[in-house]
Length: 251
Image 1 (cartoon, rainbow, N blue to C red):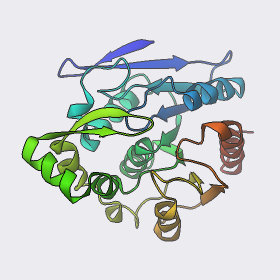
Image 2 (cartoon, rainbow, N blue to C red; image 1 turned 90 degrees about the horizontal axis):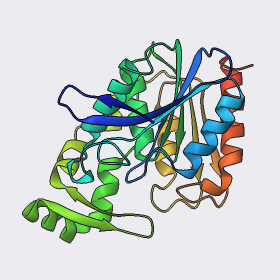
Image 3 (cartoon, rainbow, N blue to C red; image 1 turned 30 degrees about the horizontal axis):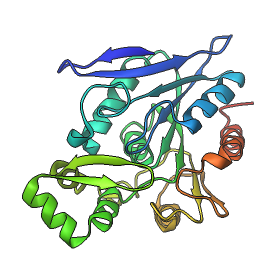
C-alpha cells in the first residue's frame, strides 16, 4: 500500500497494481459505506483486471481502512474530495479511467463522472446508492433522526456494520439529489444490482436507467442477489469486461 497526503495533512491509503505490460486503462475501485479497499470483491476484481492487462487502483476513503479520520466525520462531499485527490494524484498518468463503485461508492462514481465527462471513460455501479440521503432517513426512522439531530451522532448497527455517524452526513447528503445530473450524465455505464437487495432496493437503479441521458446505459439484475453480491463476483466481472468490450475499452 501507498499513502497520499492531502492538503490538510489527512492521508489516503491506496494500492496501485500494474500488469506486466504498460496499461492505458486504469480501473479505480470505490468501496461502500463502512467497507475498505481489501474487501472480497475488490481483491477479486484486482486480480482479474490485472490478468486482462489493466492497471487497478483501490483506496480507503477517509474514516475507512487505513486512511485517516473516522466514519463519524463521513460526508459525501468528503468522499468526492477523496476520489478527486486520487484521480489528480496516482491516477493522473493514465489516459482512460474506469470507475467501479459499490453502494455508496456508486454514488461517488456517478457524481465524479458527471463532473469529469472527458476524464472518466466508463462507470460500473454495483448496487449503487443513488438515494443515499433517503436511504439513511429510512434506516434512522423518525425517532432515530430526532435523536441524531439532538445528540449530533448516532450508532448504526446491522449484520455487517457497527459504526457511529454524525448529523453532518445527513445534512450534507441533502445536496446530492440525483435529479440534478440525470439530464447531463453521459458516461457509458453498467449497473449491476441484486433482486433481493434489501439495503439498497433495485428500484433506484430502474429509475436511473429510465431517466439518465447516458448511452450505453445497461442494467443487469442478479436474481436472488443481496446487497454485497460477493457470491456472484465472477459473474459481475464477466459482465464488466463484456461491457468494456462493447464500448471499445478492452479487446
